[in-house]
Image (tube, rainbow, N blue to C red; front, side, top):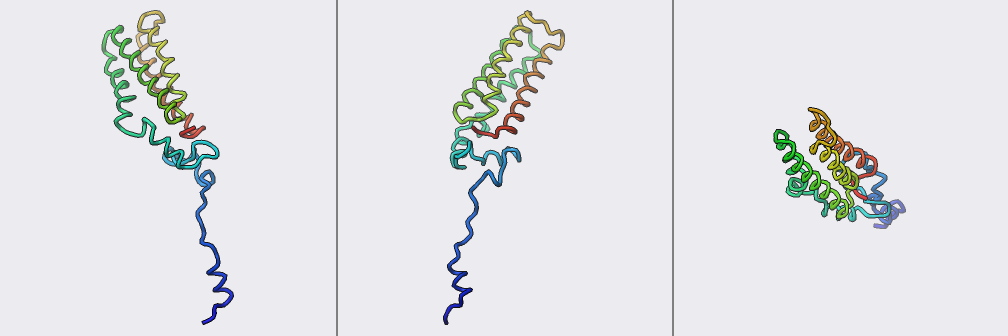
Length: 168
């Protein structure tokens, strides 16, 4: 049976291909999970971003616990201890978390780590000042230091990845 013109056109048409322009469909402002699928920078493929996620220390629970949650727990548990011991634990924990952030930023380009790492390392100065009695912050000094460190870290994390995306 001979083909009609409409049948020939239908057979010669290319199947529709999905668009691969990720920026059209996904924005780093939609959600952190979707932002991880966003290319790391202009002109890079989603595969490149996936490669960065593979080296991200926050990608596994084990490395997250070792790098951030364990030192944070030590800081909380040190609250009732004497000031000198508390100062030592807080300085070590802040240095550990800040160093992990700086390392993670260099490994995978995680945006918030670029800013939280130096912030946590700088938080060592007021902790040392208060712990050694150089800068007395009163009875609630440790509470204020903890709120500034924790709140600042959370705000930097949320704000930087919301504005700049997850990886750069």
